[in-house]
Image (cartoon, rainbow, N blue to C red):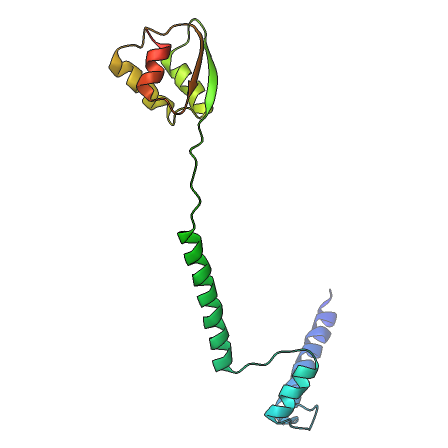
Length: 156
């Protein structure tokens, strides 16, 4: 851009700002539009005819309180009518190969959801002193068994 065109552009901005300021300060005091003022009843009727629902603040609060009490009753009924929960038992066929460790067995059992933590299983095997007594073979174990029972099945 040349300096002459820059001065022209800046001059145009100054003129536009001046005109906007003059209209703002010296123009009409209120927005023009409908000069008709509606009463509260007329406004309600006009909105209701267009499908709106009009409530007073008190009516709105009463509806919210009623909805909350219905929700609270439903939650109370849910708590009183609890269905008996059945414990899910996971059963797996575990194949122990030669060279497996108690950690490998624990990880496999944890993946099958028979035990919760493979490290705790391995620690229990160590505490019982059966870490070197892993017997290769195929075993059926389930999550209803205790850790001691699983150890006694798989280890010597």
